[in-house]
Image: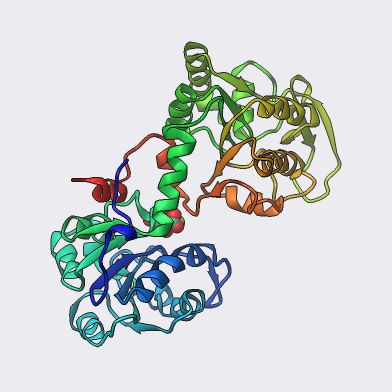
Length: 397
Ligand code: 3PG
Ligand code: MG
């Protein structure tokens, strides 16, 4: 995969459009998780230090082509300024006279944040007219938003085709680590896939099972795999209409020689609530009135055995109901094993997608993996083996 980086650009005095992803969790007008801002600030800072006029583009939430005041990017200007270490000017629109005037007023080294790109319908339509209006604001386009790269929108894909472009530092780090994890990994390679539903991860499981030596399956989707093998799972959440999908994944593993790790023992309870009474049983002995909420100690030990000989690990999704202790124990123990082997230099570990970052943070190890992606949907599509349009546009000749 070849793409330009900030090292290939001469930005002094140039207007550089930076596509960031400031779609961060907020509550009562305040950012509750700054990770994406922290990751994207270095690109903006570096460009400003090099004397560029930096113009930041982002979407926020899903306003569907209309101006929705509660989805304004304005409250992001201050947190962004704090992380970049420079003032950030805000403009009320991302195209048209307000944006043009704000860009024209920029001096070298200054940073401007434009309003939510999704306030315009042309953004999600990838309307060439919108891409052209955005391109008119800059001389160079830098995409630093891997987490939005699965969207072929005007500010991710369209504009990249109209200006000289490069990957920002965060995009560069994401692509480099993803390549090491799955594109060209050191083997043996193991994938850990957890989460609730097989149905949302069919393409992902089918792609991974062809590429890995070991596929560890956790979370409620385990129940569907167990049920597919004829094991009674009691009251557990499972997808009766995806037993065949689970069998297909197991069949593909046999064909490709991948080992599938399903839990040999499970933590079950009669109620799903915090501190509910529970017991750990062999996977074949779930009571009719019980539900599976976590993987058991023997399963974690088997995971650890496999992990010892593994060189590269990709992780998506928790192994159990980690938000509701004590059903977090399997996820926490497994994550800590990955963290410790990574710290010891024995393992390259990359995690991402949805609940994964929260689960690693809960285990206290999000800083101990080789790389934790800030992407949700984009990470999943990448695990599915899909080309991401925002990345494609950067690597196109
Ligand atoms: C994300 O939060 O995953 C990205 O910002 C993309 O947002 P979207 O799913 O609304 O396109
Ligand atoms: Mg989202």
